[in-house]
Structures are given as C-alpha cells and as structure tokens.
Length: 246
Image (cartoon, rainbow, N blue to C red; front, top):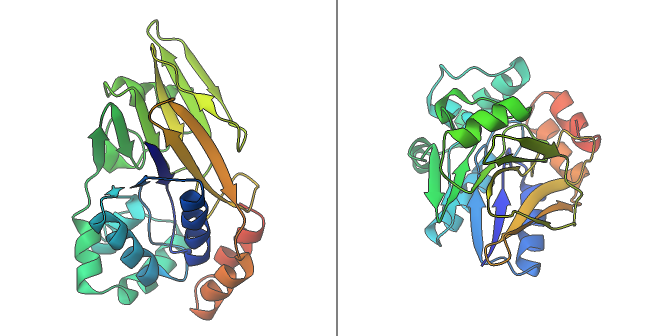
C-alpha cells in the first residue's frame, strides 16, 4: 500500500490541493494527516472540511497544537499565530470545532506511529529538532516507524538496537528504504508553510511493501495563498514568508 502523509497544512488551500492532486497522481491508496490543519493561512473552513471528508473515507488524522488551540485558549502560540487563531475560531462552525477537539493525539497501525510532535508526551507539543529529541521519541514507542510534523522541515532519523543514532536531511524524490533492525522517525515537512528555504509544499509517500519513504515537493499558487491571508486581514508576514519558505 502506498500511503501519503501530510503535516502542517495550516489553512493553505492551494498547497493542500496541489499535494493531494500529486499524491493521487502517484497512486496513493491511503492518507495520513499529521495535524495543524488550521492556523496562519486564509482557508481554515475549506481545509477542515476536506480533512473531515478524507477521514470519513478512511484517512487517519491526529491533532496538532493549532488544532488544539481552537478550543483550548491555554495553548501557547506566538503573536502572529495568536492573531491568526483568533480569526480562525470565528471562521469554523460547531461541527468543525468538535471534529478538531475530538482528534486523537496519536495513532498506531501496523508498527507505524502517527503523531504531530514527538511520542513521549504528544500533548506537550515538543519539536523534534535534533537527534537527542528524536531518540527519546523513538524510545517511547515500539513502532518501527514514527511519522511526525510540527517543525515544518523534512528530516529523517534512525536508531539502532545498540543506541546509535543517524540523521540527515532527505533529498526530495529519492526513495530511502527504512530497513528492519532499526527504528525510524520520519519528519515529513510542511504542506502549507515550509520553513527549510524551499517554498514548494512538502509531503511524503511511504510504500508499506518495500518500506521506502519518498519526500515530495509540489509547487502551488503561492500568490493566491498569500492573497487569501492578506484579504482576510491576517498579519502580512504570514503571506510574505510563503514565497521564501521561511
């Protein structure tokens, strides 16, 4: 089975549409959504409705910190994110808010763990920014592969049975086989707000038969996504950062 994994969509309709179309063209058979469907971007209503439709058709979805913040004002966000969140809350209906509130923190299927941040305490929204955090996350689960988002930058970590860590930034389009005998942590990057200096939307494909993961980048209409942010009165910097991938 070919699984398409999406994280940190952040209400960016244009980026999400492009990634979904690309994944379907590549033959994706299952969809996994790793959180942060709202926040920052100008189309939270459309994105949440699309996620709800995908889940209704069998997709897996977990909660991100921005999704949690919709109904929980105690979740801490930076000033720009908070401004966008206050607007977002007014854009979502009761059914959408309830859907986000009821999402699980993590899901495990067939020795694959899906979580937004790291696995030790998903509710703390810890960023997997280096090998030490990745190691703790992998040691908190028996899953062969953990898939996560949250940091908006693609990365790949592995842990041997002797505790040796490896990490690297993957090359888009080049498959990496996740060999048995090691645990793996796949940070898939961000659909709606990449922060690795590449503006193209990011997602990942995982083949359950070959155990290969492939990081994908998809161009999208950045100008239209930025216009949605500006036209809805959100901080201008949220629109400007899309074109530089920061």
